[in-house]
Image (cartoon, rainbow, N blue to C red; front, side, top):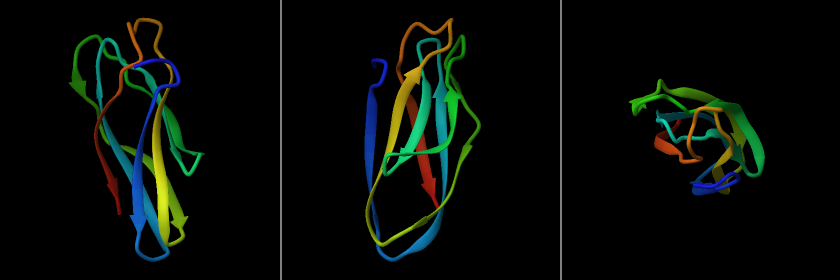
Amino acid sequence: CNLKGWIDIALEVPRADTCEFVAKYTKSWDYARIQAFLDAKPLGQEVDTYAPTVVPAEPVALGTVDLAAGRHVLRFQAVGHHPESKGYLMGIDHVIVK
């Protein structure tokens, strides 16, 4: 809940494959601008998750990546916030990897 705060999600990929990443966030009055990273490289665009009230956001396509078999790390990091936001919280409802 601080600037530069993050959450990591470990992904075990059984075989090399091309994977598409989609995230669904919640928006709120105290939420951050979020940047997703895959293996320390930015994935998709920064997303502002501020809204005056708590609301679900539309799914966001983060991108398609060729992944080697093995462990990968998907990180969501608070990189700033809207001028009207009161904090750096993140609401990550779900991530789809297909």
